[in-house]
Image (cartoon, rainbow, N blue to C red; front, side, top):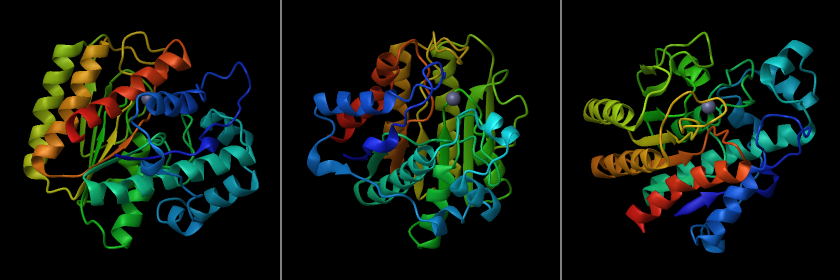
Length: 299
Ligand SMILES: [Zn+2]
């Protein structure tokens, strides 16, 4: 299985910053140790072209990101301090998702060890997300004639508000978001299908809802490619999560999504999205599960 990774996915943040940047190299090293990432199957992305980013984002916003001229309110909303390294990192990660999607179309499955930055809108970023990598990848593949219809399966615990807004009214892109109803963002956008969960939902209820909804979508929407946002902030104990999914529940979730898409004959591009466990090591351990399940099924 091909996966995209770049060492500069990691950017140093102030020591007290809540975003666990260390999870990226930790996940990479873990998958290396487990033999899930090898030299021959590693995609090293280059920074995404501005021309590609313009398919989703406004010139004004991209200009501010490139020039470091976001105002104080915009930086506050973003939740991470701007730097040239952060701007470069975001373009590398967006490119990683584009490359993973291309690889998925050839191989049936591929992943990016970053991405899933679903809170980014065309003209602003929020919730640690600068660029909407999945939306950019969809528009690039459509422009290149590689796909017509895409399905976004967003199981991060937070609603994919940026993605929902970008594709609202677009019948070629189905956005499915299953998230904590009372969690961030307070103002939800409208996905094609939103499933809002109460605080404290556990494995059985979660998996039953997922199975029922995903089966219904795949039966009715002929997707050329699935983008899976495999956020692990649904797991109990997550700092921002509010749900009560166990490690085994998460493993069952990953297995179910991958297996269902494989049976439906739809390729899958995996992005890791959010995860805020007690330590970055633990977060990386949880993010590794989707790749372990991918190997179990696809070899
Ligand atoms: Zn999240």
